[in-house]
Image 1 (cartoon, chains in turn blue, purple):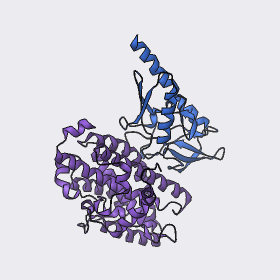
Image 2: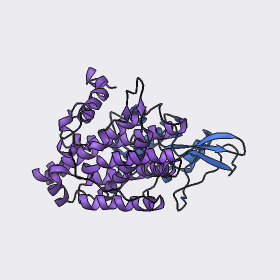
Image 3: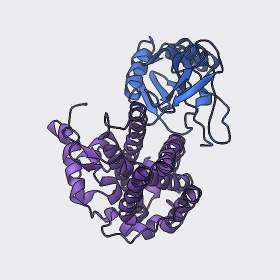
Image 4: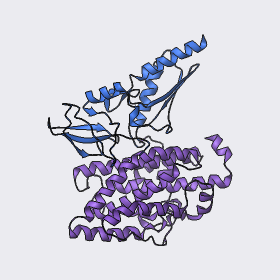
Amino acid sequence: MVALIKNSQNLEVWKVLESVKDPEIDTVSIVDLGMVEKVEVEAEQIKVTLLPTFLGCPALEIIRTNTKNAVMGLSFAKNVEVEFIFSPPWTSDRVTENGKKGLKEFGIAAPPRHLEEDGSWHVDCPYCNSTYVTMENIFGPTACRSILYCKSCKTPFEAMKPVSTIM
Amino acid sequence: MSNVEKMMSTEEKKAVETLLFQLADDDFLFSYRGSEWLGLAPHIEEDVASSSITQDSMGHAAMYYKLLEDLGLGNADDLAHLRPAVERKNSVLTERINGDGYYMDTPQYDWAYTVVRSYFYTQAKRAKINSLKESSYKPLQEIAVKVSMELYYHVMHWKLWFKQLLSSTEEAKTKMMSAIELVVADMGDLFSYGEQKEPIERFDLIDSEEKIQNAWLEALRPTFEKLELDLPIIPEPKLNGRNGQHTDELQAAIDTLSEVYRIDTATNW
């Protein structure tokens, strides 16, 4: 019985975490970004373990606070701890299908899974789906994004940078 | 973390701390010099790129300072901002100014110097990070895996600049060649572990100085061969930053970068 309650509370925490959005991309939750590694519920003590996307990301502290506040809203929550760990490392293939949809909705191409031998990669335009795009800058307005340009619909757009342990 | 601490002898802990300070201070100063370029880079896309690299690198420094905090060395922000030059363990190369002038006034910064320093430094960091993935100190091993992914893009970026400027006009080549000379002259301590060399290597925290330096040279080789340049010869250090020997440029940098922090160290900036 206790185990059952714990289990359902655990699911409730996961559910509420879906309301915690990336502070800069409000169509994607931290769950969809693959940032949530673990949720532990022990009596009134709740611990959420997160993986940072990029180590220098200034949004991390905002995400920590937003996560804490969201979980504290649950009736059974008394103490909430949010911890960032580095192992396993966050990789871009942790972004869920739902996350990819949310990114596209925001005008950001999802991180590609395939890398060419020379390290280059390709995404399609998130607006018109054209494959006729050029890389403008590997580095973008945030650590996790690159800037591209679609030659078909003549729109600049961003893509989430692929990162993986083979790099 | 307390378990890790218990397992380490005083001697090993000292070696871990020393290596962490070297890694932290290196990335911290490298990023600080990078941040001085903000708004001044050759074009807007470069401004975005180099400040993104600077931000990543500052994140790496913050992780190392956090590991030192976990080892009981004090608050990470304090370690970054408040330690005087004589306690710093960064290599001399990372503390050097970007050029004459002050960034708020009339900076005469040298982009060729920045490209060479950044490429050589980032490639050296690559060699260290590859080795740290096998470090006997687990927390460092884990961070190395994460840093490695971000570093991939940094190396790619600086290598591209290096190749392009050296394949460009005569003026660009001349500037790059004198920048290489300047940078190499300061590289004597980049691969040094200073006074703690013996225990750092004995405890398998990272590969030997010689091995890292060799890995660095091998990484440069294809680029240098393509450009028909001789591989650099690293001199003996005139000053060894790993042992707290620095130029005046470091204290000036610390005074500037910690100015706001020192106004109120309790505030969450």
